[in-house]
Length: 83
View 1 (cartoon, rainbow, N blue to C red):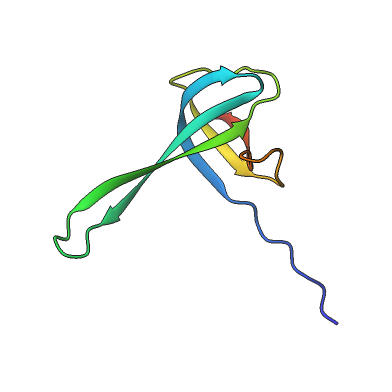
View 2 (view 1 turned 180 degrees about the vertical axis):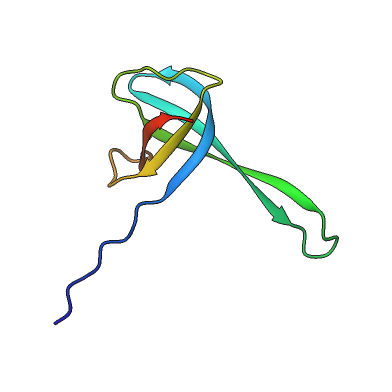
């Protein structure tokens, strides 16, 4: 049998848009995609809830988040550091 290989956790860079929850921040991650018909690059964004154990990150901070095993129903990322 072959041993299952561990996949590299996904790391994303985004901006903190909410820090009102205890030990949780909401991070908006932007990505640029090319429109299939008009060939123009447009911004798509997605919001991720990320675990912040010490409540050190605040609105406007640019941070790196990393994928981790589920912490709660919505939290699957953890804040690593400021960018």
